[in-house]
Image 1 (cartoon, rainbow, N blue to C red):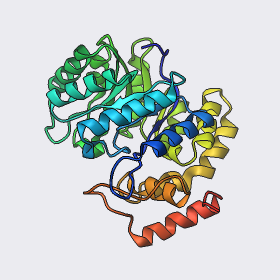
Image 2: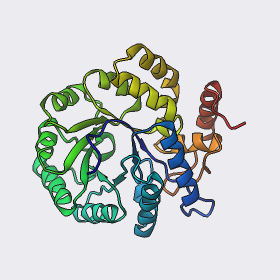
Image 3: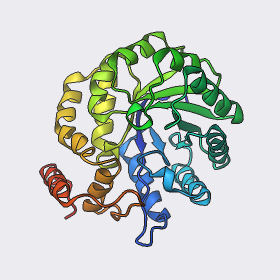
Image 4: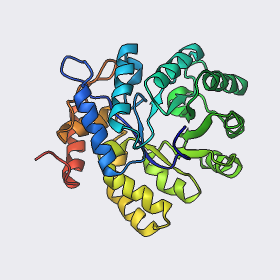
Length: 297
């Protein structure tokens, strides 16, 4: 990969849909420009936040290509490529590589609940199939299986596995990873509301949802923490905390896309089985955005 060790803020990009449910590519490119101008360090299309499981192959390719083209080499593009079928994850990773992605984000196989050896063989197969970086994604809340520290550290020995996104919320596991990781291997958070504390124990950055809404503020928080400016980072953390929390009042990405629609950035369109936000929660979300001065004027 032409970029050095992954560090800082990566945004798990939403996928904007038009009213006819097609991908709004011009809007996607505008979102990418907004992210880069705000100072984020990585872009992650086609992940959970990007509703990747609802995309057809041609849509996936157009979306990743659009992000790569708009980023134009300024920041790494890490395309979601996971599946609970290893063969499908391999196919997705190859598509991402063909589209110009710098790396792929590969979620632990969901539903199957593999053994530690199964997880290892899954990532080994994906990594051997491409010549770009591979980022492990451990999110037990969505996959019903935890990739424990020993297994992740074994996977980290595979040549082109360059990082892990840890969203277990298990600080003991996270500290084992940080303490025992190989040189140059990045440990990235998957939890916006925990990342300040996780940076304090040695994490390298975050793949974020809230950075869709407030990329500059969130990037400033993470960059301040990485520079040891903890008072400034704490101040931003607490200013953003309500937004970070309400982003998960319903399944991600329903709240973040609803917020961005209220901010005038996208349309509030989803693909089934996701639907528009419940009105009672939308009222609460609007109040938070209003308090923060983020509503479209």
